[in-house]
Length: 371
Image 1 (spheres, helix red, strand yellow):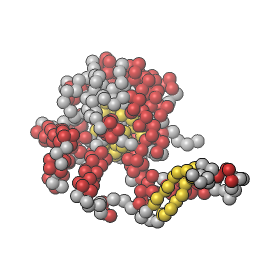
Image 2 (image 1 turned 90 degrees about the vertical axis):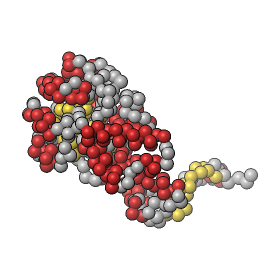
Image 3 (image 1 turned 120 degrees about the horizontal axis):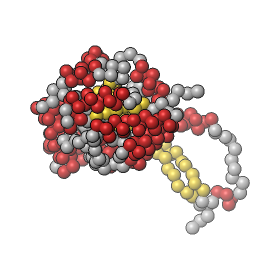
Image 4 (image 1 turned 90 degrees about the horizontal axis):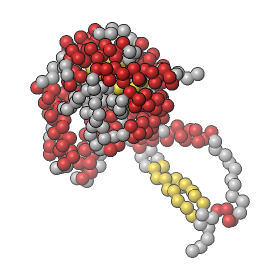
């Protein structure tokens, strides 16, 4: 019997070292994560909201839209996927339904946070959390829903109280989440190496997760000077201007007030972290790559060979070659056209030309009668 996604994720959590997990936002990005050799992957609510709706991650995307996107992602890969469950979409009863649907979708794990509704994106202003008892009951409800479903889905309990209230409050909530059965703990927006160490010392038997959005944004700020990222790259686009302002505000906030160091995997492991998420890396580089390509196309410049994969690579990534191989298993030499009338108004596919650089597939209908 094949290993369940949750069991595969638990095996990863039990293995030595810190495990890095990029965050995907659609089936293609998840496939690329898998092909790159990562053992598991996160979904990013921020990135899914951006890719699917082009809207900010402020609870505008619905529970149904997130689950639909998740099912497409899970069907595209064989590695375990951890869902962004936001705040469970309501009270404890909503949390239970969220867990049941995540299990049905095939998620290996899901993380749940203690924010109020509507929630705010991590590392942004205006975050508020529910009272302690409600936060703990959400995690207990998730554990109960898992038990009632006969599942072993991994529950990641996240608290946003570090910014909303205090670091001490975030430690109390994390310990309480562990006490009711959370499998992994996460404090969002830790502000220093000392805080990271203190977090990893509570509930020592429960794995700790680090959300590296702050590290990624700090790196973006440095890279912006190297790749000459500036407002003129956006051609006056109102949306892109707001996006730049948002990124710039976050980076300045972290540089001016935050103290989280950018740590390598070895340092993260030494502190005590087991998994690290990279929620915006793929979305960020995708935006930049598309902007560069569009800027070139506007000037009549086709992307160079070094900046895009070959057509053969694209076909391999999206599954053409495996499709052709499987198609051959069902190929026959039998034709079922028995009379002239049978060829009237038939659907047909004609492959006119195909080589390593070009492929055209024409689909249509034809009639044997003259008009």
